[in-house]
Every structure is written in C-alpha cells, then in structure tokens.
Length: 239
Length: 239
Image 1: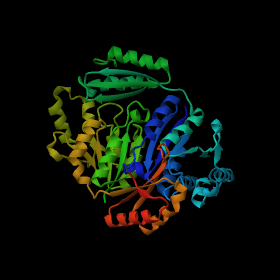
Image 2 (image 1 turned 180 degrees about the vertical axis):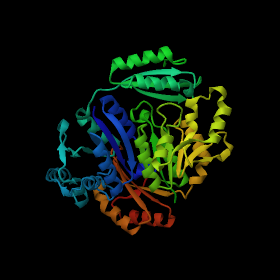
Image 3 (image 1 turned 45 degrees about the horizontal axis):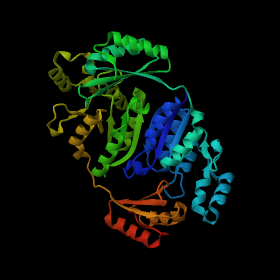
Image 4 (image 1 turned 45 degrees about the vertical axis):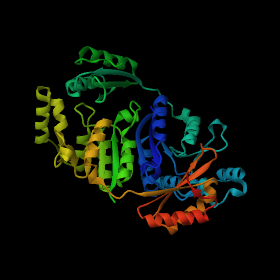
C-alpha cells in the first residue's frame, strides 16, 4: 500500500493566527483513498526546518505532501527548502515563467517570478487539464497552503496515490482498559493482520472503551472481531 | 521566551478514526501563555517514532509536550519511547504503584501497573493538589491523549511554561501578494523584532491579503505598522 507523510509549513498555524484546516482534510482524504498516512509535521517557515523534514519524510514514505510557503512573499520558502533537502539548486522553470507572464502581464514582477523558481529536476503535473500545474520534486508534491486551493489541486491528482481502503469494525466495553488489556494483547498476537486500537471515552455516560479493528484483510478482521466478542469481558458491537 | 514542541502520539489521529482536538487546543493555550510553539509532530504508536521525535524536540526546545499512549493496553508505548529517547531504563515508580493499588484495589492487574512503569529519573508534578501526578522526564511532560484529561492536567501546570504573550496587528491589502511583496521584505529588514506574515484570502469577496505583524516589542510593532500603512500599496488596518 502507498505510504505518505504531510508537512504543514506555516508560522501562522503554530502561532494560532489561523486554524489548520488542511491536516484534518488530508487525513480523511488519504483514509478514503487507502493511502497510509504515517506522519504529520507542522513546522515554521524556515529553510532548515523545511529541508530537514522533507528529507526525512521523502526517504521514509512513498509520497510527501507539503502545504504552504509557495507564494511570492519573503515568508514563502518551500521551494528553496525542498531544493536544500535534495541538494539541488533552484532554477526559474521556463514553462512556469511563461504561464506567469501570460496570466499576470505587466504585474509579473520579480516577486511573482519567485513562484516559478523551483528545485531543478522538478516535474509539472497537468492532471485535469489545469492552467497552472502542480510542482513535484521527486516524491514530494508541493501544494499551496490556502485550503480551497489545496483541496482543488489535491483532488485532481489524488488518483495517483490510491491504494485499498482499510475495513474497520468498532467494538466497545463498559469495563476498564486494564480489564480488557490482556484480551486485546492476545488478539494482536492471534490476528497480526489486524490493527487494534483502544480508546477510553471518559466523557461519555455510561463510560465505555471503544476498540477499533482495522485491516485490509476482511476475513482476518471478522475473525478477530468474532474472537473478541466471544471472549473479552463485556465486549459488544459499538453503537 | 520559553519554546515548546508537541508530539501527538496516536494511530487513531493519523488514520482519521478520531479527530485531533488536542493540537488546536494546545496551539491556542500556548499562544495565550506566551510560550513559543515551534513544532508539532503527529506520529504512530511505535517505539522508534516516539523515541526519535522526543529526542529531537527535547534537544531543541525548552519544553516538549506529548499526548497519548499512557494507558494500560498494548498500543500505549509513550513511557517506553521516552525512556528509549534518553537511553534510560523503565522502572515501576513506587509512588505511582501505590496510588494505582489504592485507587483500583483488586482490579489493579499487571496491565494497569504498566501505567506506573516510567523512565528512570522521571519527576512527579503534583501542582493543584491532584490525586494523580503528571509524569515529567527531563523537559518532556507526558500528558494523556483523552482531550478532557489533557486540558485539565495541562492547565494545572501551565504557569510553569508562561512567557510574555505576543502583541499582534493585522493589516490588509486588496492588491496581490506580488504587488506588496517588496514593501513587506523591506519592512522585515527595517523592523527585525517584528515577525511579518502574508496570507491571501482567496475565498473572500472582495479578495484581500491579510498581513499579520507580531512582536513582543510594542514600540517596534506599532512603528512597523505605521511604516507599512504609510507606504504599502493600498495597505489599511484589517477589519
């Protein structure tokens, strides 16, 4: 299955000036696509932070999605950070320069042209017949931070990251986590294809623990649920 | 000023099974406290991921706040991960063991006692006269993942992380980012104590760019705003 990491680039998120809409949206979108999201990092607009996080994630995952830092102002450093991550220089991509000149006319100043200054060797993805392509450096897809733009551009290329979505079942117990811990540990050993999570819901009345089972193997998933329902203390299907 | 990083430990967040309520809450709380949040990482429940991220953040920031992974089940690996980060063994902390026995009585089984198995050298913080303390290993504060519990426990110790909150001003322009980029870059050079952000609001009608100015030096903040308002193309106070 494809794996992915997300790098949210923006002081404005860390400082609480703007809420992070992109992470929750990407989490749900990747889940639906069947692409395993294995890490999200929210980092400042600084060259070294971007370069380090992108280098680490690029080496570990099939895909890396960055958001933010691709505009024309001083705090837009994502292209430079990705270039540093891979030790390649930036260059003005001729196709992007041509598009900006055509779109902006005489307003296409030096600042605007920073948007066309991308890591050498980057690809342009034109999926969906867009007028402005997505810039992709190796396995790093560089998305804008503006949530409406990110969503639009991600959905056009999403088919490239698709795997098999997980199947899920939810059980519950009104007993404590400690009481069911042994049964869960045994289930993990018996059904290694199933990922089991245990989440106490302290705010709910009556108190319950939600147990989530996830797998791409439907047979193993159901066998694991059956085993737990027959054994665990007070385990039932979750409402 | 104190600096901080956050480590959100949980497959359930990455896989979208549960929404991450803790990050937005911590972001706003740290902003109000004047503690500079410089990184958030959302990582899976695996020993190596926890150990690596905690080691990196602990070395870079004054404080690290972890959430999640402190219960009695197989997927609760935070104490073990923090121990690995610092190369120290786990041990059953006698005070925690005693509390669990007192609270749980005969229900205090082997699984429950994993909650008392913490990295050697950890401190217990009793702020607010709590009946169950916060476990702190060096500069790493280990919080529960259940949002209501995290908030309760964080607020009791928050005074330890307080600095001077940032002052903020917001300007706006109906022109493009490219048109104002030069003025912003110059302002960054003239007022290095002010952190300047530029955020296009593509969904708003009329279109505008919000420019945020932040500083702990009120004089520099106002001087920077005055300079931009007198110079920038179409810059006004943001509504």
